[in-house]
Amino acid sequence: MSIWEYANPKRFMQSSARVLPWVTGLAALALLGGLAWGFFLTPDDYRQGSTVKIIYLHVPSAMLAINGWGMMLVASLIWLIRRHHVSALAARAAAPVGMTMTLIALFTGAIWGQPMWGTWWEWDPRLTSFLILFLFYLGYIALWEAIDNPDTAADLTSVLCLVGSVFAVLSRYAVNFWNQGLHQGASLSVDAQENVADVFWYPLLTCIAGFVLLFVALVLIRTRTEIRARRLQALEARERMA
Image 1 (cartoon, rainbow, N blue to C red):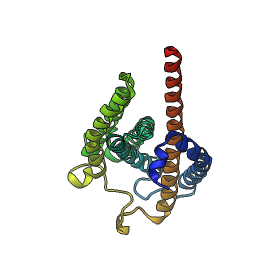
Image 2 (tube, rainbow, N blue to C red):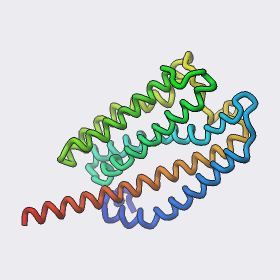
Image 3 (tube, helix red, strand yellow):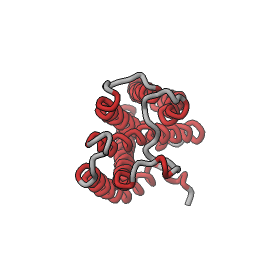
Image 4 (cartoon, rainbow, N blue to C red):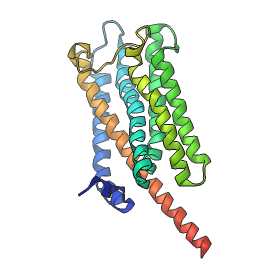
């Protein structure tokens, strides 16, 4: 069985209907368990106090904000190369979810940064690139809504997604590119010495798993909704022509 068979809307609807309840249930379990573990069962940090526990919301949402755009990029490239409509609709479906994750990351970052830096906002390289990424999300959604022809909208938003990917990369690696930024390095790393302490690390991994599963569930739900909306538009167009 080829993966491209799932580009068929009917096959996608059948497969996603089977997967969605499991993904949703696992997302709820991981999120509730991870957040309860992190907020109520882990100690305060010796330097940051209880403020450090914002990590269980900030880090997963920031990761999904960036990787969500990456998912949109892959789906957009598939549309441009293979012209599979499900991929274009999946990219469109992911945009509001990714934008929400970006908002959560910006908001929780301000809460976390204020007691550490003494300010709610700083034009730090990562913060600035993250804000620009949020604006690209807004622009992507607005462009979809502004164009009536769906194929033309998919083409133009795919190009916008390619351009915005530069800021997605900057958001991820800005700390490495500009050492003078206030933002600390990654909380998770392949280098175990750079990771947070194990007492924070394990519940953080659980929260990340929950956020990833939540993202997948929401994108599946929204993609299914987009497919139904496209079918409804096609039926209405046939009725007008009849």
